[in-house]
Figure (spheres, rainbow, N blue to C red):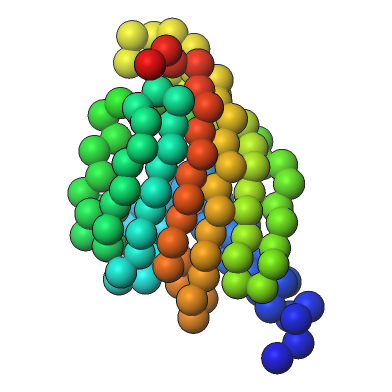
Length: 127
């Protein structure tokens, strides 16, 4: 298979998936996850969390997450069926204070589905 086609296809998948996440369209976002997806999150505010499978991801408690008011995506790097995206987000915390975060998400695809996500997040909240 042509490597350039894989990179363009993977880049398009990443862009589509991130757009769904920004829109808050979690139902459609879930369609891109493999049944046995693993999502590892490393955050400066809450440490290390691992979710196993679509069921756990769909039941994810986002109560400590800010209400996002903006996303800015930067560099997307694609290597075969792996892609990373870095960016910034802003929002409001439940107490009304401003939130500023930086992230890098690494996606590992299998058959055009996300098999694994590694999310690294540095945010303005104090641990």
